Image (cartoon, rainbow, N blue to C red; front, side, top):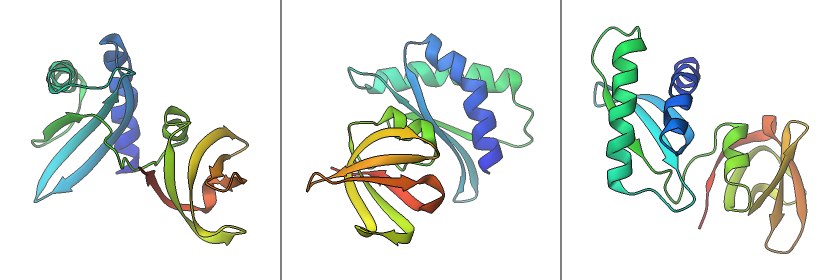
Length: 150
């Protein structure tokens, strides 16, 4: 599914940016036997339901015209939400300055769960500043899962 996520992201990015929003991420999942294409959009002022509906119409036109996919699908467009999962480097960059909870495959000096503010990205990793003011560099390959935290 990861390949389809990236395909959908690349396909929809110019359309979403053209509407004045940022495309944060895309999920291609099967829920209750239905294929769901979920697009997450963001804007500095926030995202209203009417924004999601408007962007959804644009993406729907695009998918109907360009997607070579057999079968039906459900299209969802929403804001990332308070606990948005972080899967790609671009999401870490987009949410730089926000709090995140990161679970690691292998523990670091702070343990196997690191919570703090997302900082700079580079050299295949991200810097997280903990509540104690420690800056910890985490390799993306060591991150098992991560999400925004409040």
